[in-house]
Length: 484
Image 1 (cartoon, helix red, strand yellow):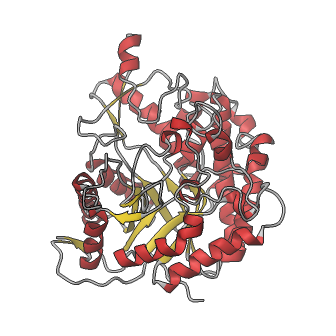
Image 2 (cartoon, one colour):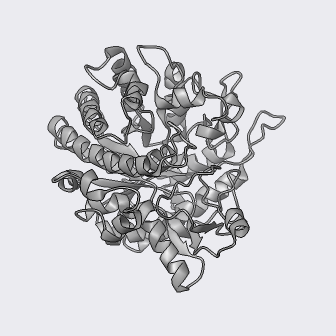
């Protein structure tokens, strides 16, 4: 079967846009397996850390789980038809590790692979280019019980899984993403505990970060061995656009510390040859980096990739500790959930601030300038072709008396951020595509079903899909090839 690369696929323009995007720009949307698939115990699938976490009392709002989610496992053909109706040229989805390799070891389960074969074939039949993400946070529970990401063995198991998935699907999937937001996996999962598996140990968080990096590098090598030469390999990072609150030395130092543990902990070994000394100094009281990082690890992590994905929602504004515990607590607006444990090991006392009062339903400030600044900075720093692999917003969507869902706030949000992408391209950044988050309303991690990010509304009782105003607006942007 012929593969179509989303970074080169053509689209049809029906009117001259005011802001045009480059020919071949990938117009997409994105989802994650645990958030949409459901069928948690079908086809040989076993529990992931998110199945276990969601069923632990008090961890997820209202006790919600992804057992059914939005039933994409059974409704994927309907969903792909909706994508085609909207004119999407590309779709980014994640593979469920425990659906393909239930214990995280051994051979693949063909029934699990068959689901993804059918999904990919259906996408291709509708002219939609698939982008597969290997890991969007659903570690098989068996591997967590063996130690999870804080132990080195998990990185090798991930590479084995990558090889199994790519061997089965590599003839039809042109772009492969290793990890989605490893910062969240490491620091929300093992540091603050607001994500699965819910551990709260700063040393485990830093060990997990290194082994996620190592897993990425090993997986890149495994993918290269089995994929055709035309396939592209990527990673998706939620790099924080860090800005100091003021131009004081203290606030600049706070920004340096957060940028180190938020960004350079990934980009240093992936693209610059190793972990930066200031990061290691900031966290030396937590882990022994000389013991953690073995000879050859950084070279393995730094295997070349073809594309770099950015997930962007809002900038990160920080200031130095002011000595007032009450003020510092009130100003801890890092947007990553409530926990008495920090997700910033080594920099727990840095104070976070909202960029502005124009916020989404998540309480995240809307500031599209951070997207253009991030893309231009990534272009200058790493010189790789870029994809915006996630960008979107939750709002209080309401179904009207006519059954329609009018969401002008989301239209405004996406328009502002597409303009920011255009600005970055005009400044020289090689941005190849944009994936709005998310295609469907879904299970929003620890927030359960209380937050809706989709451009397509889902009635969770009936599973009825209704494209929102934003979906129809996005369809016109795609048809036009840019902003009106």
